[in-house]
Length: 307
Image (cartoon, rainbow, N blue to C red):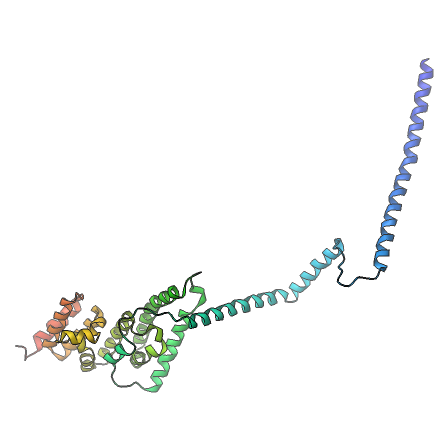
């Protein structure tokens, strides 16, 4: 009985192995047939006439081809073209923004009317060559103020004008100081005449004209033009209080400007002018520096008529 069972088991195992060997080629054959069928379908689809506006579905090869084309485009300068397009777009946006800003006239509060401050300190007209150099310097300053890189996002036209007004004060101070360091006093004087022509939207601003007057007086003293300093800025300490207030000359009086006036009065030995300037500063709360006190005392000591 055991022999019969062993015989049947051996026969069953042989038949199972035979079945496995026979089934494996059939599966491979079916797989090959299915692949051949897919290839035939693709070939048939390629032979079909293309419909206008129809695009083939992107398979593995189109995707790799697209990637290859992108790499070729980048290698041949396509990236630079994209960068140039972005730069042109930014430049267009900047020009449009400047155009809108010009159209939107923002009126800033000013302490004087147009041309009022220049009329207070104007003397003889400068040489045209110096005027041209002053205009070029102010044009460069205007380009720095309009630099879009320092702009604040989502600022209104009024906020932009206020920001540029404050920035112009420091830039003007540094510009005139650089001219003084080069001893280019003629260009400093020319700025007085062309400032409101180049920056009409800043006309009548006390801070700007205070800076201009401070450097202008210093430049005149450096040329030993002490009489010009006294003649130009004497209205800042006029005896007639109403005349001084209506002329807006008191807006220009600062500690640095007063110091330059005291220097001129000390060299001219004008004790009366020094006392009037000192009294005006005390009444209006303008700080008197140590240098101003020194030159005021110098005028008092050397003015023979005052004794």
